[in-house]
Structures are given as structure tokens and as C-alpha cells.
Amino acid sequence: PACGGPGAPRADGGACLAEQDQSALLQRTRSKLAAHTGGARDASSQFSYSYNVAQTFAAIAKLTYCGPMRGVAGSMAVTCGDKGYCDGSGVRIPRGAVRLISMAKGTLFATVSRLERRKDEPALIEPGCVVAIRGTMPGTENEHWNQQKELVPFANATCWGCKVHKGFLHNWQLLAPAVKHALDALKCRNESLYFTGHSMGGAVSLLGMYSFKMLGYDVRPSYVFANPKVGNAAFVAALDARIGSWSWDGWTPAVVRVTNGRDGVPAFPRSDDYVSFYPEVHYKGLQPRNYSVCWAKTCGIEGQRGNLCGMRECNDHLVFPMPPNENFGRFAAFWSTCFWGAGVGADPVEPGLSADSDLKDVWDKHRSQRTRSPTCHGGFLPASDCVPAFVYGGERIIGCTTKDRPEGAWCSLHAHYNGHWNGCTPCEEKADGDWWNWNAADAADWGAGYGGGG
Image (cartoon, rainbow, N blue to C red):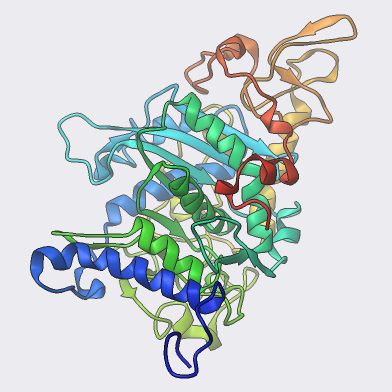
């Protein structure tokens, strides 16, 4: 029986209480518009999709696939600046306003950037800050945690009945303290905050949205790409109710999922206990206008359940119309983009297959760049941002990290701290705290707002 109906279980803290609470949140959200119009309006008829906003978030999400290489921050400022990939939404990333986060020996990577308004242009995205989380990197522990599909409690006092993917929660708990540290460094506490990502990165971003909303940040509706499902119905309802909103312009959902073709990843996990976010903007190829907006599993990816393809069978997981090069995981000019900070190349790339080997090429290039570097003393390798100075073998090492610690989260070589390509600040200007050494247990203890304890 339905909650509250004849024969229904009592709403005493169990599933019915969770259902009633989420229903109340949704009703309060919709009533905001009803107070002005005399009645609620159908969300599906009022939603307005913006290709320009999708293009901005896609460009930022794509660059996370560089990993923690020294040119990433500079390329983000160039791509979302002079090269114009963010012009359509009226924002840009200024130089020196990007922080890199690399955890778990480089298998988890994220960027945190400031967005500022472009002069004399209307902004479709309110200026603020954006967190972008990289998707699965083949050959790493990402693949192990992707398969940890058990639904576990999302331990947040405001999210009754919420359960989420165990592996994605593990990844978020590792990233969360570093994300907060980077947001503080960029003075984002009172700014609009967005999350984005492709594939696994998009899924983990959804946990970040709820967590930081409950920490008091002004989390705004965001776009994610080709992400798998992340939680149950209670989690989906709670996130949509707390971040989605009605206005005179219509319904702005908390999450816009963008999918393509027959990609099977957004249908994962296949369990009915998992629920997708809607709307889903579903493309059928590379034409920017060739899309449909789906509000139920009868269309889009779920509407093709018998005809979806795996990552070794088609390229629909990586190939989209809006990211640079029309591809999330492959680069037209990998070294100039990721190592030298010249921004994304404009030339198209061969789509290939959306198989592990495609992204593994990027990972292998990233690792080979580290091992070839001749610039540090005693076998030390350049870190992605800046690590505190330390003494090794009687010699003071600055701006490098050790061979067995390639995941150093802050900096580049000392001579280039303020170079145009990385936007770094000197170590002595950074906040103290070895948060890059934290593990899942530390993150769980740090605060319930991150969903720890599950």
C-alpha cells in the first residue's frame, strides 16, 4: 500500500517517512511558482535546454582527462577564454584561478576553477566556481570501484532514506576534503557553485552537489555527461528538490543529463533500485540540434535497453557534439593541451571506439611524461601543482614530489609557480594541511555533510 494509505506501514522513520519527506520537499519547490500563477506548471513543458551552457561545461569536463599535468590549468584558462569555448554562456576562466586535485596515486582527478563574466555579454551561467571530476581512467582502481554497485546509506542527516552507489561514494569521500580546500583557496564560499563531469566523474559530481548544498554553499543546477546512475529514488528526489527550482522562466532541474546514441553507460547499474535524474537531453549523433528531451525511461537511453552498446562496441560514450574535438576522451593535440597549456586543439579527432584502450592512451602518456622528466634532483618528479619544500639526502627540494608519491596535489616546478600555463601560487602562500594524504576513513570522520559513514 502507498505510504499513508490503508494498510500502509507506519511512517515511523522507515521507508514511508523517507518517501513522505521527499514528497514534501518536491511539493514545497513547486508551490513557489504556484504562489504566483495560481497553479503548478508541468516541468516538461517549461524546461529550456541550453546548448551553449552544455558546451561550456563539456569543455571544462573534457580537460580533466589530461590528468594532473602541468599545462592543465593554463589550458583551462585558454580554452574557456581566448579560444572561446565558453563565450556562448557569457563566462570565462581567468588565469591563476584553477586548482588541481589528484588523489589515490593519480586515479582520481578533479579541477576547481573560478568563472567570471565576460565583458559586455549576457551570462547564461551565473559567475562563481565550478568543480569538474574526471571519469574512469582505464587500468586504475576506478574500474574496481565502478563495480561496487551495492546501494549504501548516504549518511547525511537531511537525506532520509537516501542510498547511493558504494564505489562512487568511496571516490567522493576521498575527493571531498580536497575540493573544499581548493574552494576556500579560490574564495568560493559565497559564490555560485557548479559541478560537472563525464561518465564516472558526472556520477561523483552529483554526490558533491548534495554534500556542498548541505554545507551551506550556493550550489546551482548543473550539466553532466554520459554518467551512470548514482542512487535510489530518495536521493534523486532530495537533490532535485533542494537544488532545482521554479521561476518565471520555467522549471530549472537540479541536474541535466546529456547522453548520446546507444551508449550503455547511463543505463548502469541495471538494477531497478537505481533511479536516473531527469531531464535527459539525448543526442543522436553530432548535430547540435539533433536531440530530444526525455522525462521518463520510455525514451533516450532507457528507451533503447535492448539495443545499447558497450564501450568496445561503439564510440557513443565519448563522441558528443559539444566538447572540443567532439570527443571527451581524445585530444587533437594532447601535448600542447595538457603539457604546455596551449588550450584544446581545434582539429577533429578520429572517434575510434569508446573502449578502454582509447583513454588508456591518455593515461600512458601521462605516466610517461612523469618518468621522462629531467628537471628534478635525485629522481624526484614534477608534481601537478606544488608540494611544500622538504629535505632529501641533505638537499632542499622545492616544487617536486617523490617517485613513489606521484599524486602530490599542489604544484609545479618552483621556477614556474607563476607561469602563465599553470596559474600556480607559491607554496608559502597556500593554506597548511596535508589533505592530499587523506583516505576514506579520514574523509568520513571529517564531516557528515560529505555523506561519510556509509
